[in-house]
Length: 312
Ligand SMILES: Nc1ncnc2c1ncn2[C@@H]1O[C@H](COP(=O)(O)OP(=O)(O)OP(=O)(O)O)[C@@H](O)[C@H]1O
Image (tube, rainbow, N blue to C red; front, side, top):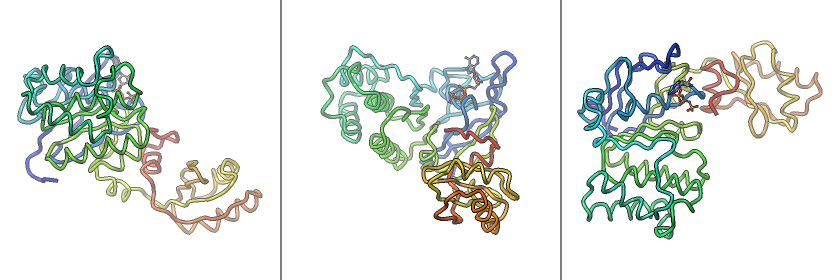
């Protein structure tokens, strides 16, 4: 990742819908070759931010520059420097995979020789080559998302904006999707991605944590985790709900999150472990292990946002 001049810069960007402040003086900068994640609960302002970056929604205030273009002053020009994949990408269901790609290539005036190479590489990377002649309307949800990405990237912009691109995509396809994103990053493309999947948040170089339209934190995933106060104890139990009820409200417990194999208990001090074990024993809850673990991104969001539901 380069540390030179940013290729995307948002400064004090705001958007209101009536009395609701959807985005509140948001500022950040993204470097070429960086994957910048926007994460936060529903309604945090991720989609609105993406739309403003893409030049399809006008902010009430602030400034956005993408690849040297002032997005507010010249949104039409900006669109040629940006690839934007909205949540519902406009595929033509009655056109084939190839015809959809051709349509977007024409839209962006991509030269014929380039579009064929690029489309073939992207279709191969996403395992879509066998489906080139299939109508888009007959693709699975995950395949539609992969075709959307191919169409959005058929021109070769330096800035790519992806709004929850892998929603509804199966884990294997998501991995392929990310391989494509890493390939773009290696080419020096800057990617801004919003996601509701916390394992994806972990893959970003930096994360902006949004809440109520504001940026609450912005750092690398590791940097964000280092900001988490206290410690995380993992309690492995066949009865996690009973364990949660026994631990909530115990001294030093700041939060309890159910995970697959038990609980993550956020405590003020790892030495609380003995007290937790005693509380569980007193409640008759079977426990196979209590160990200190590194917080997950989900733990972090719950702790930093003070929202027991978390964003996903
Ligand atoms: N066109 C609109 N008119 C009125 N309110 C809107 C409009 N678009 C978004 N909002 C509101 O602005 C706030 C931010 O919405 P936004 O879609 O940006 O959030 P988000 O973080 O993308 O959430 P989600 O993941 O649910 O899409 C929400 O309260 C939403 O209801």
